[in-house]
Amino acid sequence: MSTPTNTDRFPAPSPAPFKLEARFASDLPEMSAAWQGEEQPAPELMLLNEDLAHLLGLDPDWLRTPAGVEFLLGLNPSPTTKMVAQGYAGHQFGQFVPSLGDGRALLLGEIQAPDGTLRDLHLKGSGRTQFSRGADGRAALGPILREYIISEAMHALGVPTTRSLAVLTTGRKIQRGQVVPGAVLVRVATSHIRVGSFQYANITGGIDLSRRLADHAISRHFPELDEPRTEGPDRYVGMFNRVMDAQNQTVAQWMRLGFIHGVMNTDNTLISGETIDYGPCAFMERYRDGAVFSSIDTHGRYRYSSQPAIIGWNLARLVETLLPLLGETPDDGMDTAQELMGTYADRYQKAFHREMAGSLGVSPDAPGAEELIGAYVSLLRAHSPDLTMLNRALSDWSEDSVAPEGFGEWITHWWSFTPDLEAMQRINPIYVPRNHLVEEALDDATEGDWEAFHTLLSLVTNPFEHRPGHERFEQPSPEGFEDDYMTYCGT
Ligand code: AMP
Ligand code: MG
Image (cartoon, rainbow, N blue to C red; front, side, top):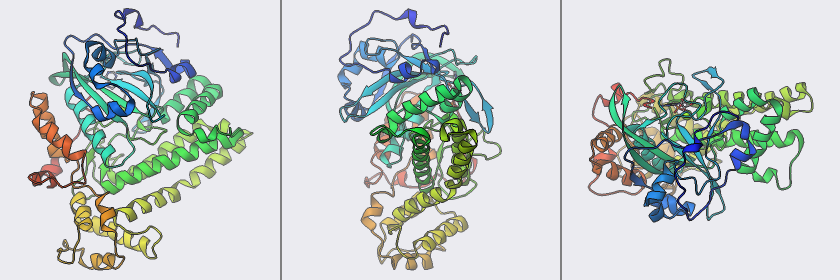
């Protein structure tokens, strides 16, 4: 991109004990704008995820040094070859926006972890970029902490997700209706390639850029298509099929857990299948198909029960950017795309069936499993139980347990499958980030009291282990709380 950059203001480099790669920036310069973070008045490293740092081969002690903190703010270029803001497009609530991009984010580069995987190190709230469209490029501490705790909870629950490495407060006061502390999140993902990245490549660079982006995505996520190299349409059909399976698997897990993403725009849908952008998300307590919490989702486009259909819609937006790559002729490409999308509903259903069978401790292939799961979902709809408590109560079931209202007959039938309770206890959590607990933790931390945040974080990152003395964290929110609960993009 031959656009202005702000990289001329780098401070004197302080050496770092590692080096990042810049594969995205070098493979896709048309989608990368060289940039750096903005200077911060009084930065402070508030949270550092040491386990994740070790997984990445980063030394937590170095990250805590002044040079490390500069690095985490996008101000120390010594470990990086090129920090960039990434360009992407996206359908937001169904409306196409051709130029979104990292308006307050930066890709520091990719790190080769000791386990051999390549991960993006990415900042959110690091200041204005050429994609900011008049906004301030900053993020508020509350929403940044929300992303930290919920993404780490999702990871502990086994859901593919971006992860959170660190939170820094900037010392800046920012305007979000009221004056709130500014913060930067350091986020880790196997990549930040979005459906919206393909939309951007398609409209700005046509088939050449789309192909290079697809090849880059394949090298990052589906290396088996490179070894040996699959050529022609099969290569991109292979990629699309893998994206579909990854996304179906993730959304099926959301559905099993009662997770509502809240803003499933195509720019918030990753090719890797990792869950990204924990803005207005929420865990539903009382089961309701129509549950929607986001203040801006006025028509309920992203309500709980619509999530599978929406991911199908987003995948259709992806496949249409690939048409010229999917066939030798435009007609062939179109036919292939239609065929692929024709398999979507069935493949999602299978993923959901596997997830639900696991949650109920039965083999997905057991005769009658489909009817058992169907009857369970019907009862959830009819009785609206607290989903987390019910799934866990079943996982801890014994002959003396008391069936919740309406579930007696179904439980007798389920018991006849001799469910594997131990397996259930490893996937049905005791602790999820319940909305009232998250709000309480965030409010306190924003006021400077971090105790509630750390308690909740430690519970939701060990969600299957009962912690005596923390019973209130297993319980639903107070009567009426969920009815009025609203989440905000809160940027
Ligand atoms: P999000 O809702 O975080 O997925 O963001 C959607 C788009 O708006 C992305 O292009 C963001 O970079 C941009 N954006 C959100 N908040 C800000 C902000 N405070 N400053 C600049 N860009 C922003
Ligand atoms: Mg986003």
